[in-house]
Length: 303
Image (cartoon, rainbow, N blue to C red; front, side, top):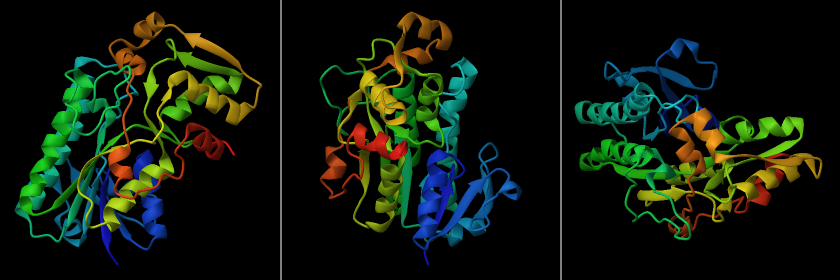
């Protein structure tokens, strides 16, 4: 029985991935600051402290794979200077701890699979970003670039590395979709800005299948966009959600860009940014999406 160690294992993606791994017969170790508060009796919770750069070495030495999902939530607080620093360092310092631990302690880790984000890319009108495009120079672009660079040294330790630049993960259990749905409870499908901006998204089940595929497919390594094959305009996404959840019983409303800027500050730039990202590289490996279109995804999520 192989063992997967997960950082950020209690978050939205980590919880869904843990569920899949347990179903498939894997042992799961979740690194957490407070292992005594772990609630899943099928999982081993092990301590790590990113600030002090320590982790449970015995747990590390049990693991065959590391899935690195840890990082402060980008969208839950206003981007003050302190919050931006926290967003960056929660990613880079946790990566540095993984690298240092693998350098220092004997281990049998074969592959490290790390999250990244489509925030790596800039804004686009028609161009579909591929993995060879450069990082944007804005806050999220520079943050995701630093994140990827901080985990890259594992390759020099004879470990394979997979990086998934993830779009908006759609799940009823949390994340962006839960926020998008809140106004719909009152009958409003709320479009942000003009609604013409591209959204590169992925169904949560496809996302965790990508991570699982990276574990079972020994040949898979490198950087891949973790997005569905068909990005959509923001308005299309909101209407697809509304139709799946409410049929025709909703009113479409708009939140103008200036109001978002007042409410969110710098973060409004990311909310309104148009990002069209290609999934062709991961599809070329043979991976097949269960929910390639927004209609199929929303139908499953709101069935």
